[in-house]
Structures are given as structure tokens and as C-alpha cells.
Length: 296
Figure 1 (spheres, rainbow, N blue to C red):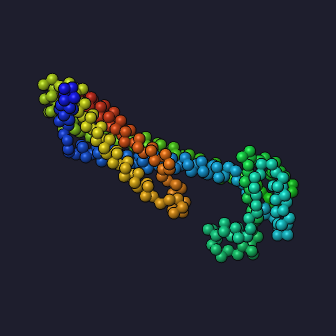
Figure 2 (cartoon, rainbow, N blue to C red):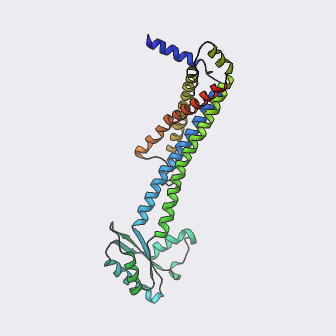
């Protein structure tokens, strides 16, 4: 008996709001579009976090020594640098780059026909630190004494701007999601207000027969919440499919830097439709009670 009365009550409240029309289409399309954008903003934020961690880890333990010396001193200073590294605590591995590797590094800027053998290029030595790290200033002082042409670069000036840029991208991703939620709330509020205004006569009639404002508002809140949920679910599914079809990082030449979701990260977009429903619920409820105070 109670279930029958509950279904009858829901049926009665549903009839207050027109089942179709521009307000229904506007709410569903807005929710779908905003959810689609929110999924990509979430993917950008998560990818930026992974990118910052990857750059920080890759550059934190690496360093380069550049040896610029006259040709007759290059071999001696290179040997002095290698000998110094072999006895420096905190250095895990090191090696001097040969001419072929130097040529490969310069190919993107000067092309494959660069005559490396005839150019006075500096010698590069790359090294990797242990987890404990090394005494950078002490190594610089030792190199200055034993190999005056050697300059140590611990990649600090490269690492900090890159990690900072990735962190800002992550912040912009979360900020975009907040703005998307606000825009969605605004659009649904306008749609609810339009529906309430279009049914002003119906609302007055319901009041005449004893309907309370809570009953009337419930009809709009329930209908627009379901519209927001269904639209957001559709937009989320389309966005997840689009992200899954993006080329892999290796196929894209590293340009996309792993944009997308990995592992358990694919569960994060599933929270977007319920959040969209909450936004729709709050926006519609606020708009309904405010409009009902004006409609007398």
C-alpha cells in the first residue's frame, strides 16, 4: 500500500514538469558537454601530476659535466674528471659521451651532416647520483682544481621550471573542473527558472488546490537532477572513449606526455555523473524555492 502511494506521489510530482521541451534538452546537453570537458580536465590534471613526478625523478639524480679545453688538453682533462668521479661519494655511475652520441644530440638542431670531427665541441660526461646524493659544491671545487675546463651542471635550473610548469598545469586542471561545475550550475539554474516561469499558471493552480511549495519544488528538483545525471553519464562515457582512443605516448612521439588515465585512475571519471547530479540538485532546489517565492 505504501509503495503504491509512493509511486502515485512520484507520478503526480513528475506531471508538474513538462517531460520534454527546450528546458529538458538544454539540461541534458549542458550536463553532457560539461561532463565531457570535466573528464578531459581531470585527465590533464592527473597527467600533469605524473609528468611532474617523472621529470623530477629523471632530473633529480642526473648531472652533466661539460669539458671545454684546448684539443691538446682535452684527453687529459677528461681523464682527470673521470678519476675524480671514481672517488666521489654519492656518484652511482658515470661515462663520457663519444662522438657518435654527441652527433646524435646535435642532429635536431644542425641536421645529420654536421662534421663533428672537425668542430671544437666540448666533451660531455653524464653521471647519476645515488639515492643519498653527492656533495655538489665539493665536486665543483675539486674539478676547478684538477680540470679547469670542466663545468658541473646538476640540472637544477632545468628541473625547477619544468616541475613548476607541470604543477601549474595540474592546478589549472582542477581549477577548470571547478569552473565547469559552476557553469553547469548556472545553466541548470536558468533552465529550471525557465521551466518554472513557463508553468506559472500550473503552479498557481496547484496552490489553489492545496499543494505546498515543497511538493512543487520536489517535482522540478527530481526531474532536473535525473536530467543532469543522465546527461553527465553520457558525456562521461563519450569522453572516456575519446581518451582511450588517443595514441600512446610512444606513438605520438612524446607530444601527449601520457595524457589520459592509467590503472585505477580510470575510476576517477565515474565520480563525475554523481557530482553533476548533486550540482543539478542544489542548483534546481535553490532556483525552485526562489522562483516559487516570486510566483504568487
